Image 1 (cartoon, rainbow, N blue to C red):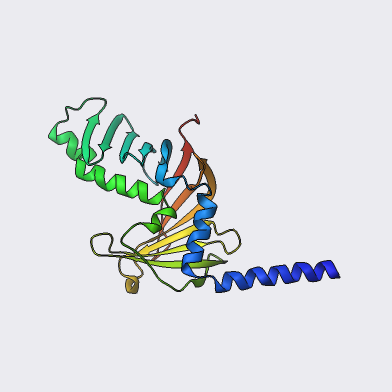
Image 2: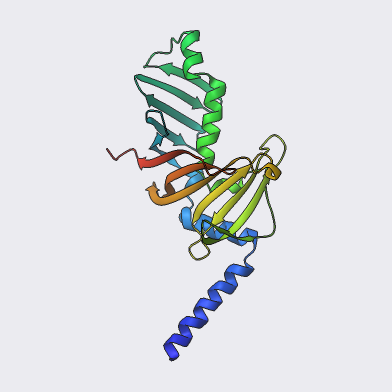
Amino acid sequence: MRQLFIVFVLLIGGIAVAQNISATELLEKTIEFHDPNKRWNTFKGSFKITMQTPKSSERLSTIALNNPKEQFNLKVEKDSAVYQYDFDGEKCTTTLNGSPEVTDAARKKYRLTCERGKMMRNYYTYLYGLPMKLKDPGTIIDDKVQHKKFKGKDYLVLKVNYTEGVGDDVWYFYFDPKTYAMEVYQFYHDETKNDGEYILLEDLEDINGIKMPKKRAWYYNKDNTYLATDILKSSAQK
């Protein structure tokens, strides 16, 4: 009986802490879970992402990051084409099937421009840098931690807006109330219209000491239509 009482007290105590946690504390706890050794800012490494979409062939993206030197490399392989964006700071180069000589028609077909490359750089470094990227300048985190049920599970939720020039959408990040792992995020262009998407995260992959979501499945908010799944693995894996 005494042991059961102790377990009950510990359980209730844990729930109370979760209920009273501040937004700042929640962010620190989820970063501690995903990046326990604080490696994101000094991250140097590479990983692969296989994108699976209905009615389309798989796309394999190999990403190499050197955050201290602001270097980013993205190689995309789909069907018979291999195209690449390379950034050294803001200096950008592109290649198609190993050649820097790319026709205008091919650039249009593969959207092989530095403008597109910059968008992809921001996209990948943001998503795979979460939740650490929530500390970036221009991020506005609501002071109140919300409690929401999503797909039948209870979560601690951070609402995030961005300053002008950084982002226009409203984001919600869902964290397990016990482990503080990030398990869902969701964004709206206009929340009153229930537009935008939600992303379900499944399993974890250790990439140079950072716990990144192994699978990301994307759906529309409005009707739960499935869009795509990204599957992450280390570049060392075959």
